[in-house]
Image (cartoon, rainbow, N blue to C red; front, side):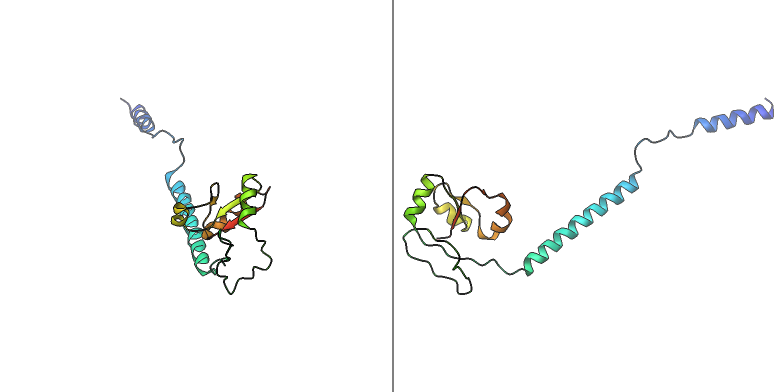
Length: 144
């Protein structure tokens, strides 16, 4: 074989070993973007947890008990603008489906007894559930 022909064969054999081009994206940039997303989500979650710990606890107001006696009023809560309803009137409104009743007590109290048809939304979760409450009728909350 002559030298020129031999070079051609060596050169063409090297070209044949060239790896095929990749159609998938490189792994490193995908991992970097994924890592940034995870770090961002963790940061947002930690900030929310920190701000909720620093927030003052929600003020609880008491409702009239089903026996008709008023529960102890918290001294710091101004409930002068809160409408009250008598148990008999509430019973009639529930029967006519004119109100939405929300039990704001803890889970164990709700499981022990509750007004039939009442939604269970503990006081600690009430602020987060407000957008999902029905807007077409009055809402009655109770805690005793």
